[in-house]
Length: 254
Image 1: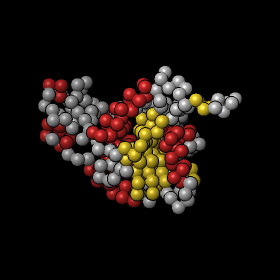
Image 2: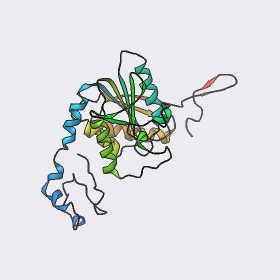
Image 3: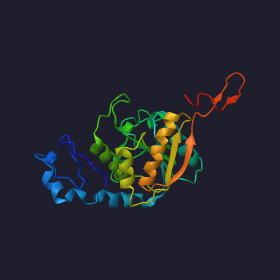
Image 4: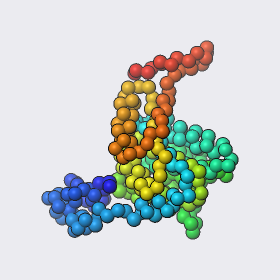
């Protein structure tokens, strides 16, 4: 369970899923203290079962992770989605759960598109007949709008993406996550716990500062029992524009 901290919680809230929830001195005066102390907040989120039912029509779920930003994770997610969708017999969707830095709409050429709601839920935006995309970027009035949300609100949006979007029958759902191992990653793993995640692809660059964070990402996957499909190293070589020779070690240790 995630240690969620409500928006109206005091500064040192131990989290609603903590064993100390509602029992410590920092809980005094909190409007949620009674519910936390009763153990009600530790009950499984009913949305997990609802998401499991929604995802029953999805054959394969792949998460794309990175320890550090700017390593080409979203670009890889977009390329992977396009590659899978190049087989016209396959139905593919790309879900962007980078709540504060959604770049998928721009990468996929979908800036300015909007999400529409129907009786069966939110309708994703389609790049092709067999490639659907969903991102918070479609819900913002401008690409320059900042999303300044705490963890619980981010978690709620991810829950809506998984439960309320009309995904239909899919062969592949690619989930593009933000850098690191934070709320969004815990949310996606928890909410998909009643279904099957095929595994994660981890993106890095050759620099040691990036590799250091990738090791943390691998530990995260091990802790939450998320299989690692593979590691992709971007920007590992420089192709000279003049002679076309590739330098495999260019800036590798900077």
